[in-house]
Amino acid sequence: MPLPKAELHLHVEGTLEPELAFRLAERNGVRLPYADTEELRKAYQFDDLQSFLDLYYELMAVLRTEQDFADLADAYLARAAAQGVRHAEIFFDPQAHTARGVPMGTVVEGLWRALGRSEENHGVSTRLIMCFLRDESADSALETLEAARPYLDRITGVGLDSAEVGHPPAKFREVYAAAAALGLRRVAHAGEEGPPAYITEALDVLGVERVDHGLRCMEDPALVERLVRERIPLTVCPLSNVRLRAVDVLPEHPLAAMITAGLLCTVNSDDPAYFGGYVADNYHAVRDALGLSKEQMRELARNSFLASFLEDDEERRARYLAEVDAYEFS
Ligand code: HPA
Ligand code: ZN
Image (cartoon, rainbow, N blue to C red):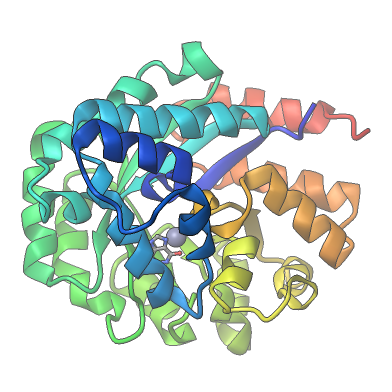
């Protein structure tokens, strides 16, 4: 039985496996510029974040109908459940779809077909987090928040993703203030490829409660001290960091140092179809590469529930934490 855990950094579009991509392409009459799944998999070699994003956005062309989004999310939830996930806070990128003429309603209602039945079908509770693409304009982000208004009962929070460098958090000050006023929780990718100053800006200007990646905080001891003091959770994605070359090799991943520094770290899969592993695979990879102890693994799982947006259901959080505490490693 796998260690029970929450997944807090997962882009649903990044769970599109080659087999499903081809199945949806055929169903929707979309032509992919790859002969087959094998040729597509060969394209999964990335130099940096942008080279991944180019393929990630290209493959989204196959996602067109509510059922496509439902099938995508359902396939993820089934895999997540098998990896011990009890709770998933799932990112989606509405602008990547609305820009192709797929309405916000199709995306949210489609995802909801799977998420609304996830507890009974997979035993996984869920939340949805809508991300703004930071390489699009601030106005586009505001329009996206406006388009999401009819669906806000299904959306827990907002996030910020896509190409980081050159698109500092402060660009999105206004939309984050509007999201906060609507009662939405706030997270942002920061310090993946961008400098530590972007992490500080995400905290101070956007008011984020959790930082996605946050790796480069380790370059700024005063920032580390602040993150520890304020108990700001970081959603670390080890296999992603290696595949996108934020870290050379897994044994050099700063996660062990981050844990030692007292940071509230969680382990997540980011875009598992592209980076070679789902969340338990990430746990096992860091355990093996960094020599993490069983109690450190348990701490990572505890952190995932502590950092999750379960303030509206503390009873559930307590139940999940008790499961982690009672877990017996084989
Ligand atoms: N970083 C930025 N944008 C993304 C990512 C990521 O790790 N995954 C999907 N979009
Ligand atoms: Zn991400």
